[in-house]
Image (cartoon, rainbow, N blue to C red; front, side, top):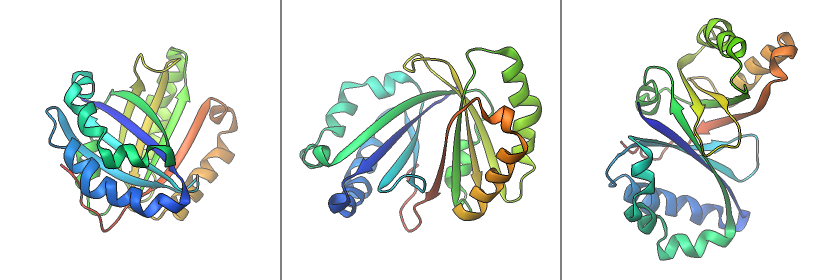
Length: 207
């Protein structure tokens, strides 16, 4: 089953516009010509200023480790921008049916929520996610799809990760999750973080 990896980048404000041009015209198109790269979705993180998230779907870690990928990622333009961006990369194995393709290609997609839960391989916790939390997500208004994943060996401890896509605005989706947290305080103590991001409209979707 495919891998997903996210690259979260915080950009120096003065270079935000150039960063987005580089992403749109060079970085994403170049990497999408690499063997094993299937699709990418660009998002604007609404919880952190000047922060962007790329959600990449690849066939395997071999695609990411390909020396040619590194060469294409380290272009003169990208190297010049490197001091003005701080990035964090995380890798996930998909656990459920591939809904990422549907989310990426769906023109109604406005908001992606990325929830990471520290589970420490707890069977009861995983059962709770499957039997209660994910059905609860799928019952929400304006939900488009839910992709369940788990972190791979590059992360310091095991975690379950859920990508959920909505046709609603960031503000409306954030309000939905705020209500959920009030109702499930004990459950939410296991949540490591939650990222609310909006799709960058007006940009191409790379497939």
